[in-house]
Image (tube, rainbow, N blue to C red; front, side):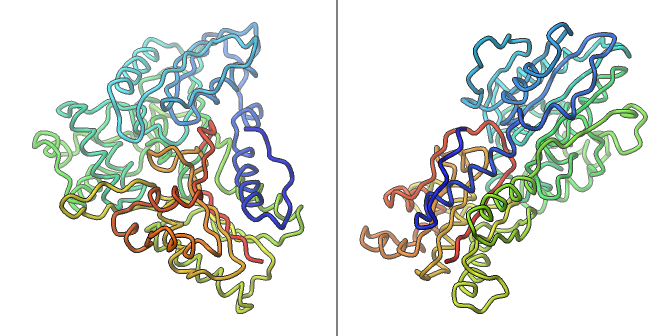
Length: 440
């Protein structure tokens, strides 16, 4: 991604996009990998991994690894998320593509191949594992008694249930043969070093991509309770194994994971700080609310709107002109559709913007951008959307009602006719939600 030219303060749209780009730039793998690479081992170096940033992380390792040191491996990323290969860069790590957010046969095949690659390693060998958000779906290997079709159904139901990322990944870890530390255990006795880009609130490495190389403190009982809470069924045999603890994951202190290292190479907080620095360089005050905000997207939008309104009206401790920044991972609970109603389109960022626009009610002097840092909001072709002081007026002129679009989770259908979708294409990184509210 090429940085945009420095924007004018009189162009809020360009300014907000500039801050988003600054956040994404901070999280690109090539900028963050070198300091965390271990020295080449006596034996082989095998690179494995999964995630939306997987292709870019693999290329960063290829650029930085000594040319005379052996290097091979396999990484899986999302369809269309492999970055263009720089001229002259030898391909030493194979990158394959699979489906996200619902797994497919390509992801299953990749997971099987990765598990085979790590078998038969020695204590002289190094496994370098590259992990980023999206890996839970991309690295799918169902437990015994569960089919790929079962996993696809369970994944869809989790995604539409309103479950947060910790809950979803607790379930995923216990229904897998490769997640929740199981991949690391399969690498023994090789040294394992995991480099990870965080896309989860709190940067818990055991949650990112369901922690395939990290010990897991969650339990089968917790996974069962989450499935019960959201009304999600699993085959009777699998349920019985969860109840008995037969599907338990390697726990902290497990001897099989001793000596393994994990390094966070990029985090949501770092990207928010980069955006804040960019705003301050333009003469704006910048306030970071948190990089761990969770909850229903539309409700989080309303909270941001309340803060923006009070700031615009001089009733807040925040001083304008300013930009209010936040990150984290909100959720969208998909509402039941009326008979004959088309399925809504959109993701977390778009739904946040719908809730924000509705609550702002056309407040003068407030603009906002919300977008996913991977460049894809849900499963659409946009990263997110923009809200302006005249969003509601322009929508009314086109016969669009925020309430109607919220009722069917159709942010895309609202912002696309307005020309207010944020379209970036895949960014080749992923530090989750980015939100910026400009108050002048």
